[in-house]
Length: 509
Image (cartoon, rainbow, N blue to C red; front, side, top):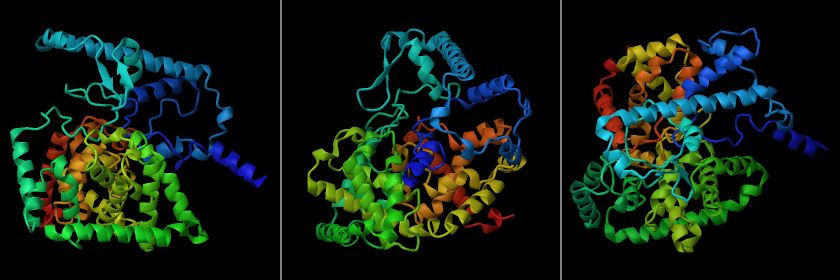
């Protein structure tokens, strides 16, 4: 009876925080918040409630006007065929269709695109949803359904890229796949990496503006070892070192992994087991059972070997860039749909062990982010607040006016290192620089977050209520970002660091 009640409770609470939900963010944008707010207002007119025409202009008003999540009833009790629900959907469809047609008509009016665009583009060109065969055909009905996923008025004209940002789309901004300059850089990397003793300072300098895909795996192994030594600079020692470290990791597996079923480790393993399917749920690679088993082993062994923090939600995201980079060493094609069962057992073991050790080196520098009460994140969010108050007082005062706390949006930025805000391809490019910077993940990340926030200052200042600000900050439209945008973000972050990192009197009031 107790088991049945438990099942009914979790079934009833399927929409509560912590349950597996679609991920809205860089890889799955929500409906246009401008439209959403309009429909919420219209629906509130239909339902005669005392809060009619009242705006949630502060956190306290927003909290009072929002029903408790624990009051959600059974799924069976929800009437999806109710007139109000159908009215909302029809209004969404009609308004979105009108907006799409208006935008398309504006594009056709532009003289510079009137002939060349229509002659070069087929009448039914396709937008790739992922690198799989599933595609969307460009017709009026599909436009009505799909185009709400985009910010129609803010996106510039640029080449079509997948709605689910593919890992391999490094040049999503429209740059050619490989320029002469990039070929020269690739050759320089190869010379550095093949030298008898790799100059790590020079390697960091070359890696700051990005690492070529072809040499990224070995470069990341070297850069992650700058403090403690995972892969040595001496080429003659690398093979033996890799072999020893990989055997050491699988020794941990034999020693500790069976203990996941013991009572004092069950909670840790259960949380890991729950979080793994949520890791990049829209990328097929991470939904393969074999990949999820690899992630479970990596995270459980790390948690066992770091009892001061143990496993904390968010650490699961930090494995993915390393896994993708080391997988790309064996895969020429796009990895997001690659079936890892096609790899040999030795290859999979190498990818797993390298991902574990490199993730461990990263977490060694930011472990206070994940200890009890997460003091590292608390300090970084406070530092971000102070920094923004100095570099853009107008944005800072705007947050204070509508009672938006930095912790409400920046906690995730620090906990997940902006991985929920950016497509995975952008995270990989960002980490090229993080691993090239002294204390990149622990210190430079603060200035990247500040630059990222100020990047959206116009959109922030346009929002004039608490709810609108939080919706914007938690669903920033970065789906079309590529190397160009990340490069500009990093340049601005470097400028802020140069101005404030060594100038404490400028940093504090």
